[in-house]
Length: 513
Image 1 (cartoon, rainbow, N blue to C red):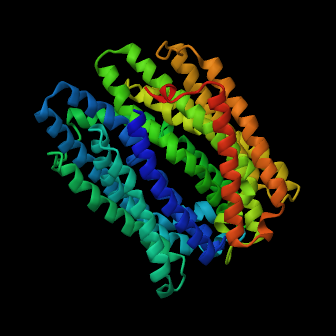
Image 2: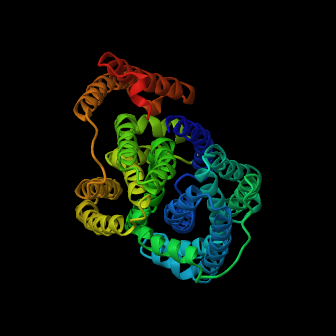
Image 3: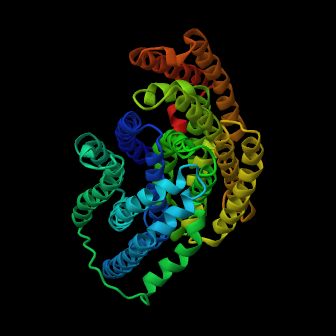
C-alpha cells in the first residue's frame, strides 16, 4: 500500500506542478477579474457533477462491486457488469450534460445575479457553461477507465492523466486566447478539449488489460441497479466538500466581485496536499478494503484502515500548518505578477489560512469514506454529509454576515473558515460511526504517534517563523528571491519536523503496512 500510494502521489505531484503553471499563467493573464469569476462558476458546477458521476459517487459505488466480482474470478460476469454499467453511465451523463446546456442561463443567473457585476457577467457565464457541460461526458468515461485500472492495481496512469488537463489549458491560454472576444472564454474550451484527450489516453489502457466495455443500455440489469442503489446516497457523502464549495460560491457572489476568484485560488492551494496524499491514500485503500471485506477479513480490514489514518495524520497536520504559516509568501511566490495585485495576494492568503484548519480532516475523510464504501454501506456517510452541509450553511451565515455588515474587506474569509469547520465535523462524524459499529479498532501506539507529530510541529513552526521574520515583506522581493526564500522556509520546516520525528523514534518500518 505504501508503494502504491507513493506511485500515485508521484504522478499527482507532476499534475500539481502542471497545475501551478496553469494557475500562474491564468493569474498573470486574467487576475481576479469579473470574467474570471464567470469562468469559476462555469467550471465549478460541471466539476461538482464530475465528482458525482466520475471520481466521487460513481467510483465509490462501482469499485467495491467490481472488486467483489474480481475476487470471485468470474470473468464473464465481470465483463457483463462492465458492459451494462458503461452503457448506463454514458446515457445518464449525456442527458445531464444536455439539460445543463439548455439551463445554462438560469444556472448562471442563480450564482451571479446578486454579485456586484453579476448581471453583466451572467451571459458570459452561460456561454461558458454551454461549453463546459459536455466535458462531464468525456471525463466520466475517463473515470470509468481509471476505476477499472485502479481495481487491477494500476494507479500510475490514472493519476498522471490530470497533467494533460493542465497542459491543454496552458496551451490554450498561451496560443488561442487572443482569438476570443473575451480571452477568458478560452478556459472553457480548454476544459472541454482536456476531457476528450484524457478519455482517449485511458480508454486504450483499459483495453490492454483485456477489458473492453461494450455499451449496453439496460437500467434493469442487476449490476446497474446495485451500483445505482449504492451510488445515490454517496452523492452527498463523497462530494460534501464540493457541496460546501458551491455554498461558498453562492455566498461569495454577494461580496466584492473578486471574492470568488480569491476563494478559487485558495482552494487550488489546499488541493495540493489533499490531492498528493489524501486522495492518493483513499484511492489505494478502497480496493484493499474491498478485498478484505469480500474475504471476511475483519482484522486485515481494521489494520489497513489504521495504517491509512496514521499516515494521513503524519502528513496532513504539517501540511496544514505549513500552508497557514506560509499563506501569504506562498501566494506571492506563485501568483503575484501581471494582473494579480498585492491586494489579491493578501486576500488569497487570508482565505488560505482559514481553509488550512480543515486540511487534516479533509484528508481523513478521504480515508474514512472508503471504509464505508468497501462494506457497501453508503447510507451512513450520507447522514454525516447531510449534517455537514447544513452545518456549513449555518456557519457561513454566522461568520460572513457580521463581517459583511461591518464592511470588512476580507469577509470571504468567513466562507473559507466555515468550509474548514464543516470538514472537521464531517471527519468527526465518520470516525464516530466507524467506532460505534465496531468496524475500526485502533491499533496500539496512537498516543506515542501523536506526541511525535505534535513535537515535530512545534519545531517546524519555530523554523518557519524564523525564516519569515528574517525575510520580512515577501511582496517586496523580486520573483527569484521570493522562490529562494520560499524553498528555504519549506526546507527548514520540513527538516525540523523530520529530525524531531526521527529523534523520537520514528523509523521507515512504521510507515509500512
